[in-house]
Image (cartoon, rainbow, N blue to C red):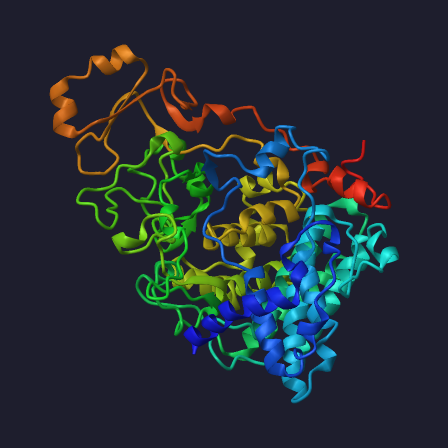
Length: 595
């Protein structure tokens, strides 16, 4: 059934392309009319609506890294970095595209023609409205105020085409109305977890409501003071999923790691919806190439994982000499998820006959989460492991966060959410009493704008979210909604090197690297040592990385030191392109970017 659905999805692309000629044109509002001949015989049944909505599945996709954020060191460029270097402006900003939203509106404007089972028809209308909500909220996250269009426009709709932006509050209320319709009318799961059903729509509702609640709570520049109503929606949506009894965390040895390198997630009860990939059908992705390619994970992320001693957790920062621990030492007595996300010493990739020697030029902390288990999947575009799109652990985290933001989190809530995640990971249970009485100063310093009654709980839920969902693409959006953009300014750091000279990073007692100051120091290394140990020699002089203490310290990229400035609140938003304003003179430049 899953394969047939995916084939149907591919076929639908051609049908939608015929019906919605504007779908591939992202110019201003895609002002091209549809071909009326081809639509006359379509939208007659629920089956037609299903075929049309199949093409919308690409509007929501999985992710398998955290670029850009404080979780990673990234050697390439990303839009946020150009923004923080002061290079982005309205004249060089990309134009906003409306093709996908218009494709959805095209169907919704014609869905009333469908005849047959009303519940079936409403399911697909709800599905389309859920996709529209997601697409529109992406625009809100970028621009805040945007024009709201509930139908596809024609060239004759000049007043609508050339209207100014609608206020964020109006647009978000319209988004929430779409989501309310979706969760009310979409069917319960019936044919596999690669399809969107009511629980998926509830999770999407929770994602958007939780995000908007945080934007309104932690962004005073919006002048919107009704955050709690969105937190309430998020908590209720998560609770509705929890009450179905259809989902549970995957448990057992290696359960967490298997979520991200499995060939088949169809029977995994943690999946609310996942993406089905297949070697036989040629459906592949690029997660296998993430390992030690252009990114390394950060020291900052590594330090958030708890140390476990005597059945209790303690902060890594409470371990004597924590800030001088080497790559061989940081994994001692840690939350097991650390070694299932960061490469551990002695790790051997598929197809390799010796332990992997990481690229210390990008920090020395390769990401192993999502790494496939067979050699043929390790190159870019060659992996065919299934990918989680929405998993139950995320729902539990959203529930705990929403309740904490409301100031209503109880021990029972923690037991139903965070402690289930901790139990699966092998981490001792948390108590609300401890969270409230022992506020972690590291977390408090990281998020100084958290001043709520349940401050300690909010901070610990954020830590749990960061760890559990690391490398799944959430971190940047989390920092933005929490008003924590300043964390993006600091050049991320990698592993600690205690001295120049030979380094053993594989843990076999033999040197693998030689880090030296100059070319002369490299020339002085005995040739016999180079050959015996197959030494990787890195010379600091003229290199792309440095050590924070000169001849020792944390690895960081020289090009990223003191190069970024996150201007608040401006950089939480994107400018509207000058080209778009020229096309529609009624548009107003984002007030945070207006000269």
